[in-house]
Amino acid sequence: MEIKKIIWNWKVLFLLFFLLISLLAIKPNPFAKGVVVTKISEGSSVQLQGIKTGEIILEFNKQKITNLDDYSKVINELSKEESKIEIVTNKNNYIFLNSGNLGINVKSVEKSNIQKGLDLAGGTRVLLEPVSDKEISDQDITNLIQILKTRLDVYGLSDLTIAETKDLFGNKYISVEISGASEEEVQELIAKQGKFEAKIGDEVVFRGEKEDVRRVCKDDGTCSGVRDCYKVDGGYNCKFEFAITLSNDAAKRHAEITKKLDVNVSGQGSNYLDKKLDLFLDSSLVDSLLISEDLKGRETTDIAVSGPGFGNSEAEALEDSIKNMNKLQTILMVGSLPLDVNIVKMDTISPVLGSEFIKNIIQVCLIAILSVVLVVGIRYRNVKIIIPMIITLLSEIFIILGFAAFIKWRLDLVAIAGIIASVGTGVDDQIIITDEVSGKEKAVYNWKEKIKRAFFIILVAYFATVAAMLPLMWAGAGLLKGFAITTIVGVTSGVFVTRPAFSVMIENLLK
Image (cartoon, rainbow, N blue to C red; front, side, top):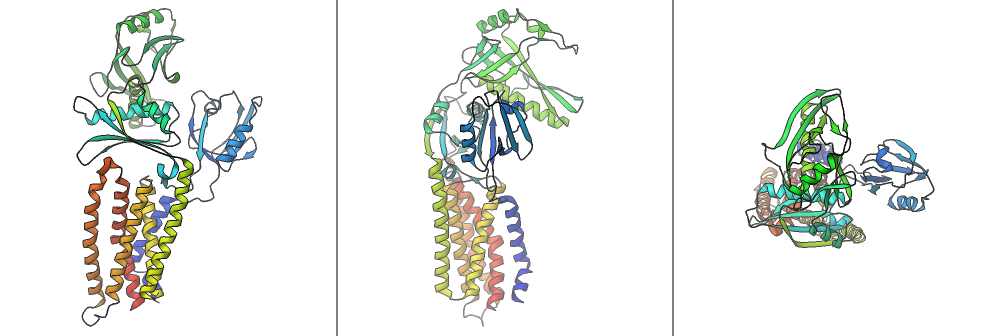
């Protein structure tokens, strides 16, 4: 009867609801097999077959793929003379001829939605400080982040996180986290200015921003924006346009090259030259633009760059058009960073060391839980107290992990330290509740009054903990943010979800 009464109490049901939501957010899949496609090179055999990033490769040439080792073995054994490729993914089966450029990057399938930070997954973390003689605006930071993302993506570093962060004094920084890259590679990619070229055929028309591209209109509605949206078969089409200013030498080269080109007549009111303007970043093709007929042989320093955006609705087409425009603007600006940057801090952790961290963390957590059980067992010597404490402790950890999975927060060592800290305060609160309800003052206070006394102490400690954590959100340029967030989430879920449920268990089991 006691168990039934406990389960059907609304506070316990509230806890069960949060545990269910956390389970759905984490979505554990310990038996997941295969490797996930993370990046596909432009023009590769795989791209031409329609394989998309996010698909899971399960078989490669009739061989089962369960992990990265299986995939590496198959790729290494792939003969250059072998022309036929068979790939089975979780979405489709693909059979095609190998052109010699498979062009695919993969990673291990995640066993859950919990994302691991660099401390656990391995990689490089860089803290950058933008430097300028003028005041640095939020838009400057946004432009710098877009350029860094484009540049790093060109080099295949797609598994990265770039975000703005601030310290307690309001100084602006940029945090860059990249999986699978060494410290030397990241330092070179961030420090170098990059080589941007625009070509028509094999002839260079203009180069990076400082050399030939004098200005790229961005975030200015007078010379940049979406100009038109209209309905087409299957959805909507929007057209963006922005202006760029070339040097006189670049304008002359453009005129000399384009005057030799033929015009393709479309019959739809817009005619284009028979060759495109190809944009290259460090010899990698990143985009191609049609050249309007009216630019043939014309020497002009002011050029309008335009392109489309598509979608099932007008809103989707508008969003796609803005996205494409921002990408093109960033590519044209990527030859040089809009601000100088200083590398303030750089940390590199190998994937092997990250795996060791995970094993050690699991061992430490098990030892910590066993230690708590031992101390509580010696203190109370009552299984009716020990079991609810263990259930509550594990529930708090599970809810924190569920919240991290839901907001896609990457768990690193400082975040795990926050989990341990919040769980530690949870055990303290459970001891306070237990001592109150099992005390000898029964004649003075009834059960409800004892619970109220315990929660008054708990709430005071809760607000003090949250107040102490808030400054850590910005301390060290945000490097302690994970600790602060997980601690706040842990103590908040404890005070409002798990500890009320614990008080119900204790009250009913000890009456």
